[in-house]
Length: 399
Image 1 (tube, rainbow, N blue to C red):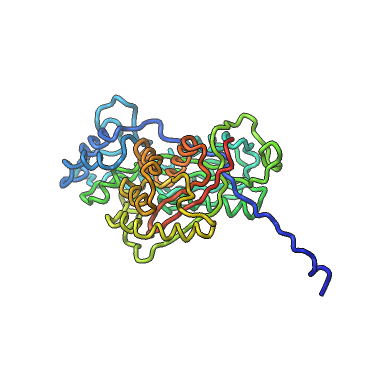
Image 2 (spheres, helix red, strand yellow):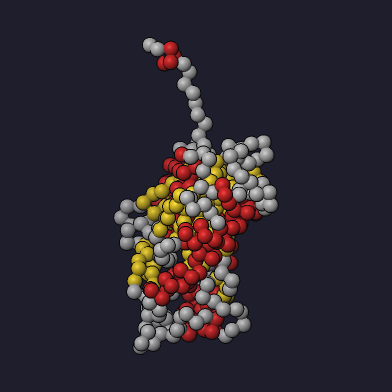
């Protein structure tokens, strides 16, 4: 036996990926939900359900939501926007997908730039230190895409390594965090900028399908950015390998990404889908989804947390993606959560609507302000598949 084999093995401490900065952005204009119902009625989306739209919109849990299509407050009814026209014999289904993608290419990049600029500023990390870019979107396509738009607008290095998480739905940002964590775990000096942007309002459907009308009542536009890096810091609280920006805003909790969960629930592929049609993207959301979530969620999260020597009771804060009020409630019931634990998700749904992938990061931003003593937080979302996606965060304290 060699002397080398008798030596005590060296134990390397695993790099921990840390959220260094968070930023969000919404469109310039928003609309009250009652007014959105009036606009929908004037578009003649559905002969069968038109009179029921105000009640349907009230039950959505949304009070106000933003859209890049909106003009300023004060304009009456349908005049708040000019993109959608009343259904007619010549145009029974609204704008074509090509028309909708043109709007996406014009507006997605600038809104994502605002969110990512805020995230970078809040991180205290100089833009020149960013090595990787992860972009997330499921509501639009164009190439060169939002990643190239960000490189140009933010002055990122032209050698930056890019990854796009596309068409994964409402849990897309959680998949983006998983990618960012893998990069930082493998390359401790890496700094990852993650940007998620969705313009869900581009996919209003002219239809009698009740599921599509529910989707029309929920979805909105928004963007969020994260800066993720390793937490091997010097005495000043910064990674010694990063260039810093001394003008950073120091107001939110910082979080370490501990673990992620991805679970496809078998025999559920027809319950939730997101498909591209000739007149926008179509959402299918079966009424069974809340009950499927309620039946499966607790066992999956319990098994996952057991691996971290944690229980559901150890989680102080919950950012549950608000697919709708029934989804939030189903998750809360499955996990035995008190009503207060759902307030962050319900508040974001009420004030912003369902913005798809960025939404959980809006909730995280709100929880970071409202629960400064939170130790563990779970980001949780559901998407086409049916899939459960989650991220476990541990607080590293206020910055």
